[in-house]
Image 1 (cartoon, rainbow, N blue to C red):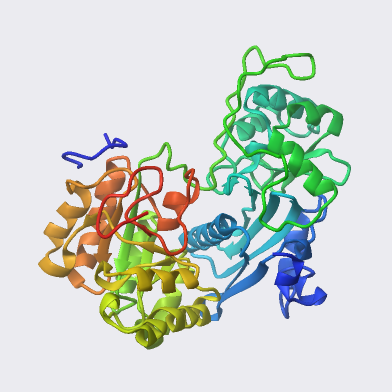
Image 2 (cartoon, rainbow, N blue to C red; image 1 turned 30 degrees about the horizontal axis):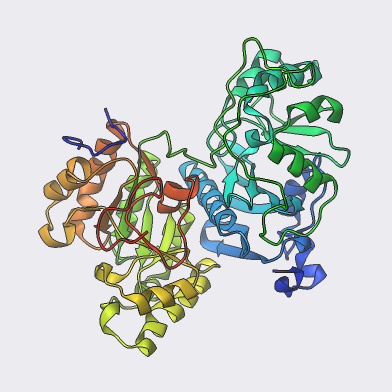
Length: 510
């Protein structure tokens, strides 16, 4: 059994935007994107309309791969780094699942549904076409500036009131909705991890639960509306703020809500009155984690350096077959030399990080060279992927204060490793597999170092993935590893694992 311990044997203001009103009006409204925009509007139709121009630092980013019919638009929010990370995680998750379905047309867009002091809500809407039909899997992320954390919709409801919430929603549902299916969906985690609903508010303060198509045994999506007077007693402190940010949107500038507190574990109720009752047989509130909850799961991030190269497509096929993600730290010169392979990685839904332009020892070069290798390279990646990378791995792990400062200027966190498979040294598939699956340093939260330019590593990949999954590991991207932790990755700081424990590994100072 995989344990969350060492594995022995398993071892600014609105002016920041500088965008015109027409550019900010809604994402996904460029040439040929009308249908995408209409789909997204349909998903959020029951929610109060948000206004992206109220979100300081929100800038749309677009990734396109015309050869595979991919267009993905999600925002960077410079005033909320963790929200930006969540947007990337959701984009990659949508692309990944579409790849698993062998989709031929993939569109991802977003809508802002709430903004106010310390509070932000954004829906990401992935839609794809495959032989099985059309799939739409929207996910709503709520951001609390006080804690600098992201959450899924259950965070709007007090933990102690979840049972009552389920009861009230069951009573409020249309008769055509089967009550047992509704209760089962409410017990599940919210998308993208489960089939639970997106929770938000309409302009009158009513609580809206939006279920994706197919969740309630019907082809279309479904919406249940809980009247404001019924919902209000069930809301968490954050839920009250989210309702206000939905009904009366105002500027979000990344600062905490004045006197609003943060999302935290709920203290015991002092007054269980008729309006704040606790169910005699309460239903447990689902996790509020966005994607995999690595606080409870045995998460490990597989990473591959130095590509993309001629062996990378084989690795992508292995990962796709196993429905497993990875993080690729790529060289700018390799992206320029292999643009098609670079697109395969990103369109497959894998995280792409920077690894410099040409792989020098960064601690041994001058500032002008660092500018080219780090800052200019970030622009190369932005041209390829529509946004600058949020994670950076220095070649050889080599860094100093100047290196860290320049990486910080690009907004990227520094990701090292906890487990070195030495695949670059042994060039042996068996040895690489053993190090990755049974390495003495491997534990929940580990980052594993490999390279997708070595045939032996590609040969080892199927056994590595199946070996880890067979022992209870949830494979995640580097950003997923820390997205839901109390403290996420910070720009210019170095990490060797997730952020829910002390950093241990190569050249870390997280």
